[in-house]
Picture 1: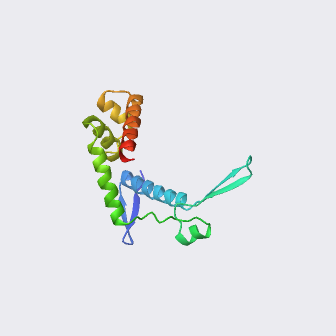
Picture 2 (picture 1 turned 90 degrees about the vertical axis):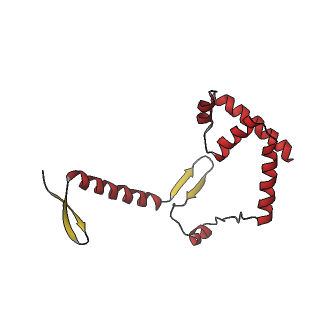
Picture 3 (picture 1 turned 180 degrees about the vertical axis):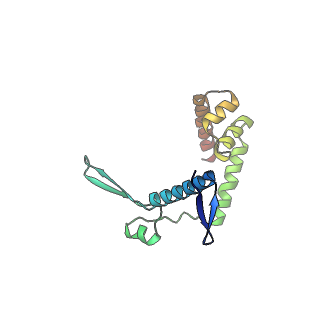
Length: 143
């Protein structure tokens, strides 16, 4: 077994094979992720004869603007946000406990329909159907 060394503050330090492999693999993964982030993708659709350029993940605002991509200002006035939250809370209060549980788990608890179905001993399709009915009910309340 050959000796393995890494540089630590400019000095070579002998390390075990496992540590050397772990550190090198970590470096390789970081390098690969950085290269992948910096590549832009070009998608050519021969049927519609269009070219779509998907910018790299690491891109400046100036480059986005040069490509003609506008970033919308989604900020809304504080008062509107407060009013919307109050209305939503009032609408949620009109739901039954089971309906509220499903909405909170799916939208605030970040559970998938499948995870919730397992938790409630139901099928995913059943949860989806219940979710759609509850959302329609909320829509009617908020209308």
